[in-house]
Amino acid sequence: MEAADLLKKEEVVAFPTETVYGLGANAYSSEAVQKIYEAKGRPSDNPLIIHIAEEAMLAEVAAVIPESAKKLIERFWPGPLTVVLPKKGPLSPLVTAGLDTVGIRMPNHPIALALIKLAGVPLAAPSANRSGKPSPTQGRHVVHDLKDRIAGVVDAGPTGVGVESTVVDCTTNPVTLLRPGGITLEELEDTLGPIRVDPHLEKNTAVPRSPGMKYTHYAPNAPLVLVESFEKLEKLLKQAKEEGKVVGILTTEERQSFYKEADYVLSCGRRAELATVASHLYDCLRQFDQLNVDLILSEAFPVKGVGEAIMNRLQKAAGGNTVKAD
Ligand code: AMP
Ligand code: MG
Image (cartoon, rainbow, N blue to C red):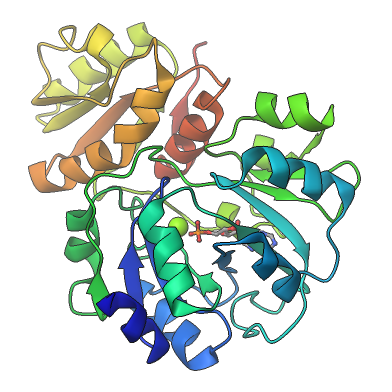
């Protein structure tokens, strides 16, 4: 594969995973990893996740593998789960942004696994978007953001899960959920019993342990307001139209016929099946940029199952601009 040859030459290449497209580089090469930060415009204190293709690679990058991590790995790999472990070996210090831990996952996508095996090294790979924008779930999203900044994209159509991996810190006991994602809290607790949820996650405040929580993220160009009541959403729509704004609504199939006054109504899936919402969320956020709306009003979702990851991303896209039910 041409992409593997580019990776061997210290270049950065975007590739599909089951969550979102990743921007990969040889995790052992600071020259290569530096190019990820430059292409994305990513702050250098935000660590990268290492992607491996076989469990033998785990021992090359992790110093200790606690029992909790072994259980999670056995159940969820390959899949959308990142475990944070004490680091070891020749990893570029840029990968971990100076931390003594490293986040590692094995993606569940044949092209990602083949590419890592051909490259012969673990790949450091954050999402393949410009920092701060919604993550890419289609090859064309990567091209839009990074066309002239990277060596290539392996385009294999839309990714499936649509939100990033769940990040679990396995250096604490019990383990700590740092970022909700494709594997749900319920699934984690079903495997390990009750786990800790990082308090910053709930409060949505600036954060030390998982820098993914620290920056504005997933944000479309127009301000997005996350509205936790359908009535309030309709009121806000009316108000914005009176002010002459071009308004986009982010909704679901169940409610897409309700917003007659809106300029654009995008359905991101079925409320009754939240996995469909996760899968299309970022594409919808990106479509609003093309439509040049002045304001996006988004419905909210139940914070259970993959709804936890969906709400986490929408809260960040809203930059804290959430309207509560009462
Ligand atoms: P991204 O690659 O954009 O999906 O972001 C990766 C996220 O994984 C980071 O923003 C962190 O939240 C998390 N992460 C990666 N490595 C570590 C680590 N060593 N400790 C804590 N969190 C990590
Ligand atoms: Mg990202």
